[in-house]
Length: 172
Image 1 (cartoon, rainbow, N blue to C red):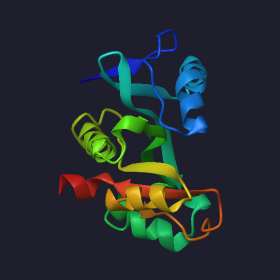
Image 2 (cartoon, rainbow, N blue to C red):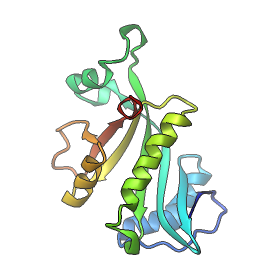
Image 3 (cartoon, helix red, strand yellow):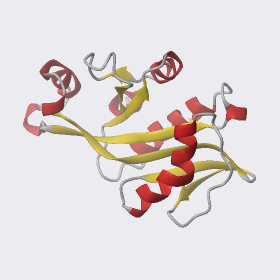
Image 4 (cartoon, rainbow, N blue to C red):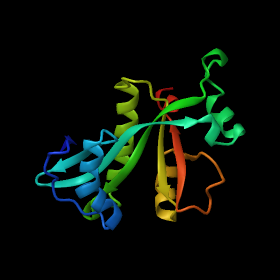
């Protein structure tokens, strides 16, 4: 298996995760996101197929967009003189595992890879991984089992829930 960065002009290896929205993102929207410099998509390739893919982009946790108590909780270990109005993060914009590889630990392996990648190859300053998780039990349970927490309780009834992982806890 190999990790491949998929540029806008790169052919997409075959992939189907069973979610039409994620499958379309992989085939179409990831190309447009790359051309517009909004995101970068990577695939884990095995032969002619993609076992999994993820798309990442720069983001932040903005003080004005979350409850004050939530932001304080996130920033409590950052020295006061170094606190910012937003905290640097990388957004996992889209993430999928092919149907034939689901429930075989590939998703957790990718999450572990991202945690290592953004702590050892941290080129721009990234304290958090964030995701807008589908607000369905399977997705929420997956992210929680990989150490992600809810950023706020205000999105309980929304189609997606913002979840975060504090990378400093991974390096400690």
